[in-house]
Length: 586
Ligand code: PRX
Image: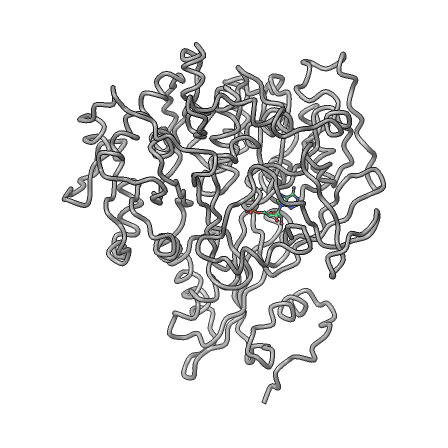
């Protein structure tokens, strides 16, 4: 091992006793029903509702005065809400949705930045039995349309600015019944009509005193997130209310969340980390969550940790690499001594970063692994387990993971192969929305196939090695090359496009496109810039290619599939491997 193992102090020497004291014995004696399902309150009739577990139950248990969220706006505004206020606001929005005719399992898209109303709306929809489908606010019209159309969206909750970005495509969504606009600053001049309604009017006029929480069961649908694959458009990953069991327990054991913690999750709810760990895990554990509307900034983040006394911080490798680049001197300007636990997810965390964190934050950064499809943390470094920098730790108690060969047989320690999980964990996706074949293809010989490659060492630590497909991971966000290629070929100059992930020291990968041009178009710098701008407008800056190369011939298989693997090998100056299926250039 290139980096020395970081040993944890004994529990008696720790600042506070962690929730999970002995990983090994807990794992050996674990039971999902005793340790997971029975830790929640459940509805009186035996049903389960994730928003009830996150918000209402604390009020019912006499904790209504505790702070649920502290919101810090981009411009420094601050708002604080207790669990009681959170319940009241979300009940009201739940009633609004019921009054508007929302039915159980209707898909309600949320397209907005992180403001408190996003969370009131999300919890209200869930309590009223709807399915929330949050979208990243940087998305352009194409990704929003593709997802809303695919899901048959009934409602959209958005803000004036974001609505104007997608206005022209809204009529394309035939299933859309109402658009609810949240004008927080009260400055936009929104024209309301039968279909377009203002949040503040709806909330002012609603009477939620008799709001009845929809009696959902653990099997009811709750959240849908779109995730990218290497072929086709993104797929809607559908989760059920029972995912909350694992979100709560992993919050408690893998992130060590305790009642009264001040928790800071830097993820946006447009991605699964921002719902599983930016809503469900923290609030079911009755912590105070800091919600920061702004994006990355080393100084602002440290300032937040210092000012609010953040105890648990969950972030991502790209951010950590940016913090490393900002330097040690910046860290030293702040008092970060309130921190007790730091977690990271979404991409491989460099061993250097773990060691850097250990020096500068006086504690290692705990890498953990999971996916949109798994709904919650599956493999983690825990508060009491020693850390092998570069490893994503060990499977969560109750989760069985394995490394398989290409025939889906289990391999032993030290061998690389397919990372797989035994199905049946509580937060397992229920479906890819209307894509049964794709869903079924993820299960082989009694395993769920993750799409990642990894190895396991002789002590049971898992080591991530890469993805088994062409999906690009840029700053922790998965980008499907097909979606980018489809956008590019809509430009009149482009004949064909092939898209790959190019290694990048900060973002891990950046999106790079290779295009062939239609006759009469010339490969100029101006056209390159135009294409990048075109893709940005359609997709978003994070998803659009950062680089474009013009090529004369697109490498394709005889069946016409673009050989991204070959484009990548050429880009990296690597051997081109097996090109026997390559189509003849002529
Ligand atoms: O390739 C793995 C990478 O991110 C993928 C999951 O992305 P997504 O579905 O967007 O879920 C994000 C929420 C976690 C994985 O298949 N990934 C995630 N965590 C890690 C990781 N790669 C390496 N190390 C990790 N800790």
